[in-house]
Length: 371
Picture 1 (cartoon, rainbow, N blue to C red):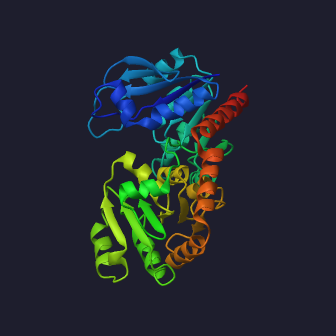
Picture 2: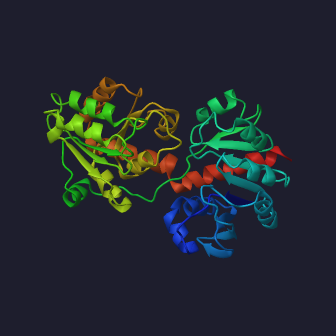
Picture 3: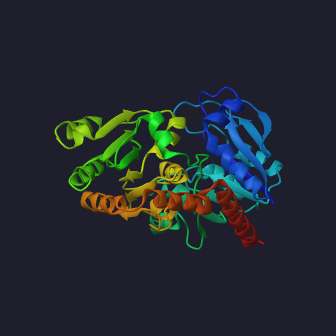
């Protein structure tokens, strides 16, 4: 099976193809996973010049586009369709639901198209999205229920098949928790980890409230927070500063190099995330790979990634008492057993091998649907 992955997002600030692939590892990692599952894969990527390289059995075709400030892409739909046609694919995998003109142009080639969501929001450009997706053979989300608001507003037309598959995976691995704690300085019984923006959607204040509620039952609990964007940093600092419980237990680490996140995940016992909505959940996937048990909000993406709560706990967004109760309950269980369960779940359901195999399954279904 010949598969073409199409990404028309304009890459700014990456002068060489290799630099772009290093900066956007998911672009090459997912394609390599699909190739390992038996497909012949070409990635078509917008760029500042035409180029072609081969890496990990995947051909990358970089297509020149004009740089247009303020626009996600400058590629003409007809140009991208011509490049895709030249690859003679059996299936086309379009990355993103927000490139309506490009999706329509590729769909007119008569080749089945799978359009994959990457954190699109319903209610935006519904008419254009409806026209674009009217001709696709399928739409993929991390969790199939994420399609429901798009179906309800008819931006995904009736009858279009919906598939669930993680957007990507991780190369993080489990390692010695003791060694990771020694290297990072992370401590606590239990040690908790937060990874993500400090904003209202991620809801760090609910997690802080939950940690405060556990102080009597878990007097040695510690929370370690990694973040880059921080619109709520003032509120978070005030919440920590004015709590006698939190000010000695919460560590605001700020921006952390990605490679160090692996060590922090290995060092932590539990990952706590309070998101109200997510397109995927890269931090959750990385934590599971390292053996960190998740206590996360009960939203479709996290439900899917945890096997409907088979690993860790799922809590209603905003329910600080629920998060606290789940943490106290899980903290009583053997940590080694919890780590083994998390790693086992990752390997069976979320590894690159599994993501690649699942995508090939989906491609086979959509290819057969148009015969």
